[in-house]
Image (cartoon, rainbow, N blue to C red; front, side):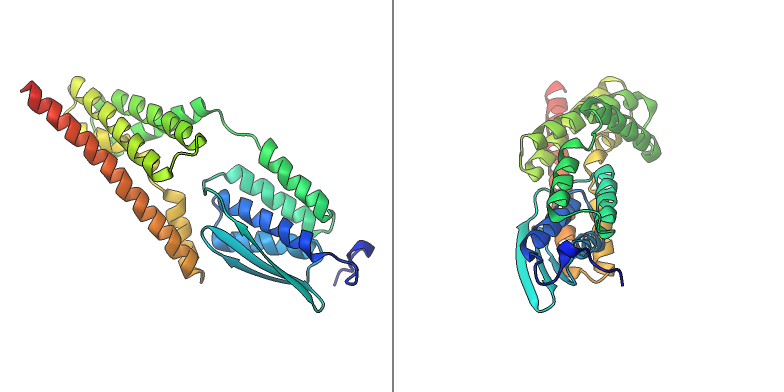
Length: 268
């Protein structure tokens, strides 16, 4: 076994900073969209790299609880988890930092500073670029679903604007379900009315394709993974979130269809 540096002598080691830094790493991994097992591994890697010999973690959807110990000493702490998204680039950089900690190259203070730097310095794609990419993806899905080319441009415009609007709402900390409903409504109305104006015979498919960016694919995969890997509580919480997201998507789509049907009835 690798000998710990002098500063990690069991008689002088402080468990408080180890527990809190490990919890911060786990919280950031959760918020970046990591699976439960991945969060466990990151937390244990960081805690043991900082000198802990015992690490027990309880993962909840909205909080993390950790117990770390050295010798006969132990401490338990809890940290709240914020809004969960998807950020693979941040997740990879978090693993790189955990790897450096595991080689006992960093102190708790240096690790905390490293986590803070990751939170502020990890690059993000520009919102307009993300919106354009989402628009192109939704157009591709619309063709796969069988929509005609007349509805392609309306789908692109609707999904691009919807993704941009979604980003603005989430940046303002709008409730995620309210944001989902509103974006689904706006995008479906734009796509449906645009497809009808362009002469498309598949406007219902265009409306559906324009809101596919709201489908919670990564949370759904994580839910399945967590349940299969022995974390049924976390997996079940993810399943509920996925189902609720789909329900609010359907509500926004239904409202959009109702508006278009009413306008068409007025015109006729």
